[in-house]
Amino acid sequence: MALTVVENRTGCVVCDAAIVYLAVAERLACALCGEEHHTETRCAAGHYVCDRCHSGSANDLVERACVATSLTDPLQIARSIMQLPAVKMHGPEHHFLVPAALLAAWCNARGEPERKPALVAEARRRSAPVLGGFCGLQGACGAAIGTGTFVALAIGSTPLKGKERSLANRMTAKALEAISRTEGARCCKRDCFLAILAAARFAKEHLQVALPARGAPCTFAEMNTECQRNGCPFYRAA
Image (cartoon, rainbow, N blue to C red; front, side):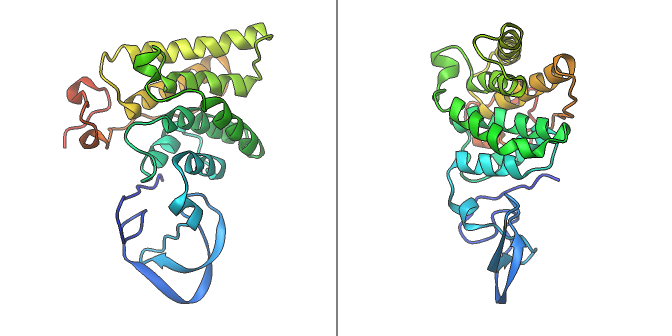
């Protein structure tokens, strides 16, 4: 089950329960990245979040969470990471989140979890040049570009490989088409959902790997002043 993370000042970032200080340190797994550490603190519900996940940048958290996850649903992976306080409503971290979540799900579905660290790290490097505002300023949403990055890494595309290069570009085109149909102002969450769903369909059809991506109602509408509300396929009235 995906974790819902609450932005707050004093409680647990996973459930907002009170923090408990233990008399004797325990070895606990971080609820976000899975790494185990000795700690004297956890919340009353048992959640422990390591210092790196408390203080890391958005991209740091995306990378750590995608490497650690065992899920095969890339939408579930992305939604859980979007809840982290470091991941804002809009921002270029979403350009990395899309290929990272897809690659994590891809590796898990193929039974190759050992490939995740290298592939996710490379996705982060390739996503860095895709700056904020690409969707409206360059006419290519970074979430859609991220799906092309996913396919390129999954099948080993290079500029000199005709079939692989074609598939990577076709993936980006399909994601851009899905995003363009909304005719809405920016929404990094909506566009990530649309891009990931397009990539899951593409992976099944062209790469023979099933990624069980399931759409769900959005929980970010109140954070987005440009939200389309009923014009968005993921909107759910409060």
